[in-house]
Image (cartoon, rainbow, N blue to C red; front, side, top):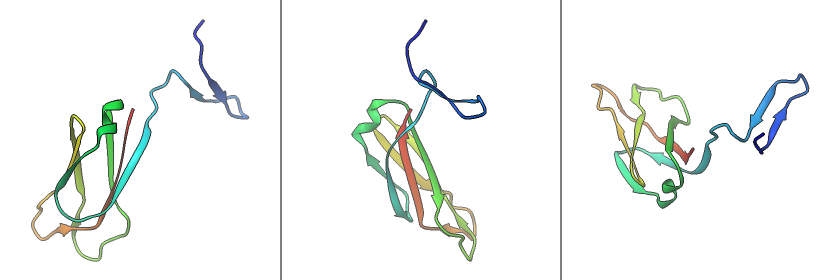
Length: 96
């Protein structure tokens, strides 16, 4: 028998098992409007993930950022779609 933590809700549905792969938020960058990158040493603690989102609805065509990782460096780039411009974006990042 393994050791760990398991939690069920009031209806008997399991909502947590410490053997599940769970993510941890390390930080966020806000107000991003151009391509860039940043070294984040804490990304070495696991498999990195990033979520880019716009905090409001743009009034004209806009594009969000795509997030990629190479070691401990997180990079982001905006698609250069015709007639669209980068819109202020927030990136939340962490590790599994």
